[in-house]
Length: 80
Image (cartoon, rainbow, N blue to C red; front, top):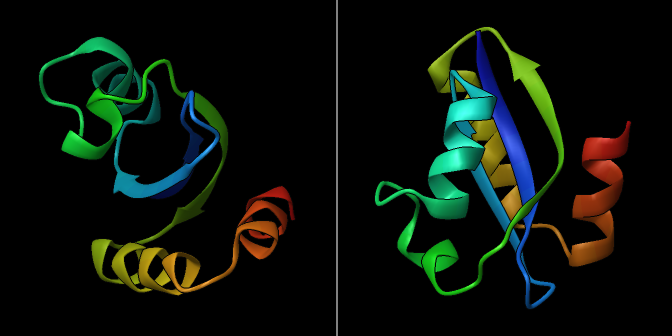
């Protein structure tokens, strides 16, 4: 199963990504060397929510859709 997740960085910006292992990926963003370049300078990060989907293809499409939304709609999207 794939997951589309939303993180809040220490500067209150949002980061959206995809993964098959939420716990591992959040740890990478929060302190590992494999976190996204965007989150490295904005630690710590907080997982706000995630959505499970059945394939990587769908995860990429949902991630793109979320990235196009304004902040308040991104927050509402993962809280559904």
